[in-house]
Image 1 (tube, rainbow, N blue to C red):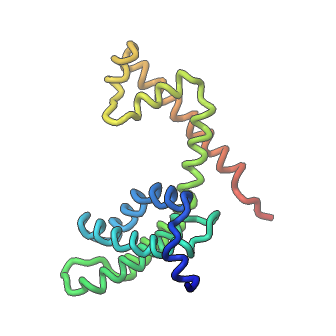
Image 2 (cartoon, rainbow, N blue to C red; image 1 turned 135 degrees about the horizontal axis):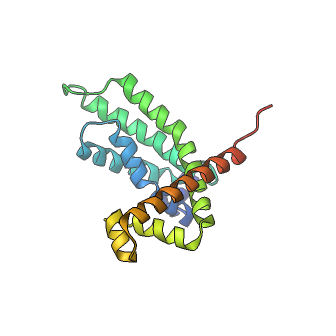
Amino acid sequence: MTTDEQMAITPPSEEFVQLFTRTQRRLYLTILSQVRRPEDAEEILQNANVVIWSKCHQFVMGTHFFAWAAKIASFEVLKYRQKHARERLQFSDEFVRTVAETLEEESTQFDLRRRALTQCLDKLRPDDRELIQLRYAVGARGKTVAAQIGRPANSVYQSLGRIRRSLLGCIERQLKTSAPRTA
């Protein structure tokens, strides 16, 4: 049995499956930013997923999974665009390439900000963290949270504003301390 045949039989690692699953929404949104219709983005995502899955053994753990998967997805977008080149309303290839490059560059910054937010949320006082969780629960609004915890809406809005400012400051400090130092 050849190495390629063995790799085809060996299922992806649990870590790969977690990374794959975690990036699906972001990958879909990346693709959607490059095509006109959500249905097209879904089709391209499915095609990209087949390729990602088939190349799972080529991914080097510890490297940036989203960047790797987004590069595969960008090739699938280009294939799709070539296949549908006769359609009248299309983004230019230059635009699609620019969007893909920008998303790739910004994905690292997005990950750093998300990690910083998680760390900063952990540093909040328990009452503040609970208020943020209540407010950002699916379907929640400031007034419904105020009613739920028995506080005036204005008071809740002021507290949320204070907590957001605190989180923003914390995130900015985290990013400054984790940024690579230049000479």
